Length: 301
Image 1 (cartoon, one colour):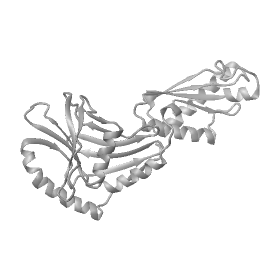
Image 2 (image 1 turned 90 degrees about the vertical axis):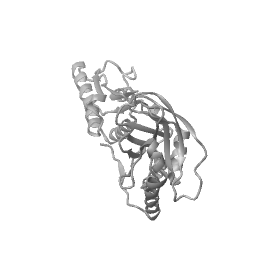
Image 3 (image 1 turned 120 degrees about the vertical axis):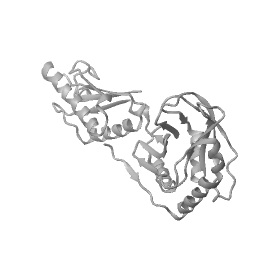
């Protein structure tokens, strides 16, 4: 697997105050609302935020009990996103409202901005782009509760509230911000066509090739829109064509095995080999032959 930094948290003094406030919020300000609505929100004792990061991904994740997982993420070369993946498919597309709910320990009023959102059908009902995702992230950083409010799918007289707890948010959030500073600027276009080269009559990956493939593996793991990875092995025109065909197959297999060892699922990987039949440069110079001893990796979304 690619290297990933993970953070677990203990309560800081500020977060201890948030915990006490959440208890009051749960028992007082939510009490009347709970009689009229279905609320999905982590209670104080179960609220967790986890961070993971690599050169290609920065992510904050939070479980919303009985509903799903919320994630802030930024992939290399892309903008900030927010997603909620639900445990069960959402049955109907509805409009909702994103707003702040101000806990009692906060002296400031909640942000008056309210954002219309669409709750989609399927297993990813919520997906926000950069601007609303950034607003929601800032809201949690202030200690506010982020709330998605919508009508119940089965009874329009009732409301559903899907809420993000700020408990244990601060330390993972600091790690997330630090991760953003070192995130690679290379995105899908940079990785879509990747080439590694080999020495004469060699199928082993040298240090440069391994470094290139390590960065590629980080990106593939981060970008769940990459549906398949096509690997093509090639050889130069020195030697017998049959031997070169086998050599190109071994080169493709080396790349396949390296990416697989880095955690890329075999179902996403495919291999082909062409021997000397598809040169990059159609010349018999050493420069051309060096360019033709290669494996090409193509990402498909």
